[in-house]
Image (cartoon, rainbow, N blue to C red; front, side, top):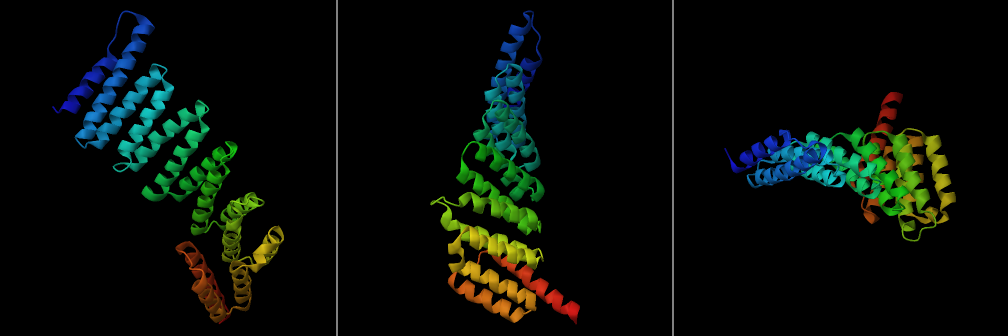
Length: 288
């Protein structure tokens, strides 16, 4: 038996032992058992056995809850999540949710929001579960906004918009980009980014195959921020809408190419624009 396994066995015995002194003896026993489980978990980490390390951390958190040490339990669940993250992301997510629940029950919403974003990233990058990722980013944004951490809230909501668009949930993407753009009005620190939020929202309107709404939206963006009409982003939206209306692939390609020469298109924008181009091609094929 390894040292870690031996420590775990001792912790199990401590956790299940019975004594003659009622609640106070039980509370002390749970505290001691929790400490022993943490010692075992760290020993498993030294042995690079992250699964058993995570399990031992979870048992430690359960002991801490039984002894009413909720803050310690939340931190120990975080340790369990970290142990499982690379070896079992789904299990890691379950444990992280336990910690988040404890943080919110203690009114620690800022801390909960930080870990909620970690949970969202786990869903997005490790599990490729975009619906759960979007919901987690969205809720983190709400908590951050309520804590008046507006810049961090906007960052979380922009992730919702980014993922939603790639999942072709364009209405949700539009709502988030427009929400962040409106929140940036009058804010000198974020105002310069508004043209990008309007541009992404406009592309989503077009990709959603609703040209009437796209035109109306672009007009509204220009009213909200009169400087928007002076940007390359505004001009490209106008040109793309016209190219889609006319079914003109050549014009579309030329305008996008010209824009890219001055403002390099990132992967997200390229993906959405390619979808729009494909929709023009499909319309041409339908006519033929």
